[in-house]
Amino acid sequence: MRVLAATILLVVWAVPLAANQQAERLMQAMHLSDFLEILSEEGLAQGLSIDQSMLGGAGGSYFQAQVAELYDPSSMYERLSQSVGRIMTNAQLEQSSIFFESDLGQSIVSLENSARKALADDTIDQMARTAYFETDREDMFFRLVDEYVQVNDLIEQNVRGTISADFSFYRGLASEQNGSLDEASVLDELLSQHEQTKAETTEWMYSFLLLAYRPLSETQLRENIAFSRTDAGRALNAALFKSFDEMLNSISYQLGQAVAQAMSASDL
Image (spheres, one colour):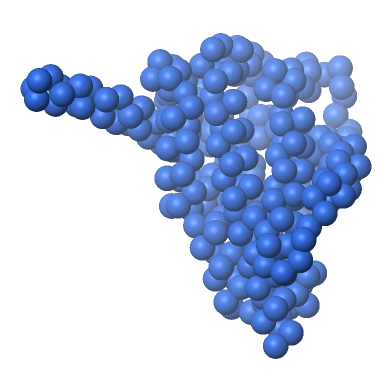
């Protein structure tokens, strides 16, 4: 009986270990650590903006240190890798890894990360937005980018994620202010801005992808879309959105708490 119990225990532990190894393989293929470095820089910039707009610049180094801890790339990487490993099957993880380890997959990841980093420059960001508005909607390149956006439901998924993160921020803010939050009213206000949020998300998403994917050929774009339609591609898209939403909701809640604490400190 003891031998049998030990055997079962080994089998049970082998499943999550294999999933974690497959998830790590995929995260490396997607150069997730590079993307999270960029996301961390965006988070720090957001922290500076919040310091000015909500704290009058009084947050200081302590508040910025809190923001830096929340957007720590290593912590985010570990959290996302574990989450994706739990959500996706080993087969889905393997197929996704094979795609992103290919020459095309590596090109896509490199182009996306380069474009995301470039858009931190206001001049490049404005150029990309102008290019989006001026692009012929009947042009094949635009139509393929548009198909990619639709297949992966990138607009509505990001809109929902934005609203959810904003709601989490206000919940965190209220939790440290000894006051109750009228969650229904706050949610109604955020939902009333859905169309504006959607318009902003659409402009950013197409500006970003048109900039990132410009070097790709029509064949490469079609291969990328084809992967998105596979079981592995759909599973990866769903897992990434779920994992990022959970992580960013947590970060936003804690960011709200940090802002409230800074407000209280400045009142003393």
